[in-house]
Image (cartoon, rainbow, N blue to C red; front, side, top):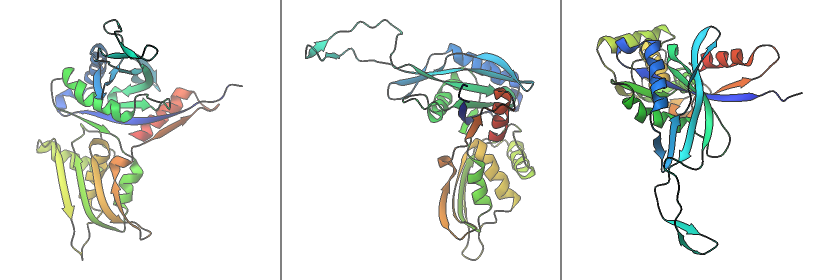
Amino acid sequence: MPRKRTEIYHCINISLLNSKDNEASVYSDIIYKLRELEAVKVYGNDCIKIRTVSPIKIKEKDFLRGKITKYTKLESEQWFDEDKNEGTTVNVPDGVHPNMIETDYYFWPEKHKLYIKRNNESGSPTFNQVARYLEIIIAKAFKGDYNITIVQSKDSIELIIDAKEIYTLDFELSYTNSDTDSEAEEMMDGYYKSANITEIKSTLRSTSDNKINGESDFIVGNLRLARKTGNAKARVESKDGTKMKVNTKNHPAIGKAKETDDEPFLTTLYNIFINLI
């Protein structure tokens, strides 16, 4: 009996900041365009690109899926021959590069979310590298403002919101093109949109007598926006009295899909993708 698979995914939010661009077809077109563009250096000589794109239906929803490729772009003409203990020349064909390794992705245009499969093979593309790739390459496929964010875990945000005391709070975010899932989040998102504010950086401090109120709509709304479109840092005292620093960047959201006999694996993936939003 074949071993049932387990796949782990991280989520990247691609947010186009002009409301007229907030259509699933615009996001899909960008992904197809990225396939045609050259790779981007993300670290040293390591390059990444979206190599393949194909449409797929999951639970009657339109998705794209494909391969993200990473390889090394060698720019030096200086080579060393160990056997001869001397320098040598190697004729490498143009456009041919070593160390190719890939991972899978799914893209949900309606939610503008890119789901990156974790490949445990050494040297494979990481979600951080893919986010860096997107930050650079999308400007070549789309003329307008955009924001790329690694979606952070809900637990890291709720740890701040539910803290017994919040001493300091810093957050960065942008508005979301209506990608909200709570009233407080929708309210703050609406305020930023109506004021045409696309980038927010706030530093909040409390007094010794009156700590920041984590239950206020202002705090809840901004923190839940930051989970998908930015990040937050806080110094808090948790419910159990532990004083700690929380940096949501250190807690990316993780979705684990385990194959079962109860449902198709694509349905399992869909449920994971929903939970990561």
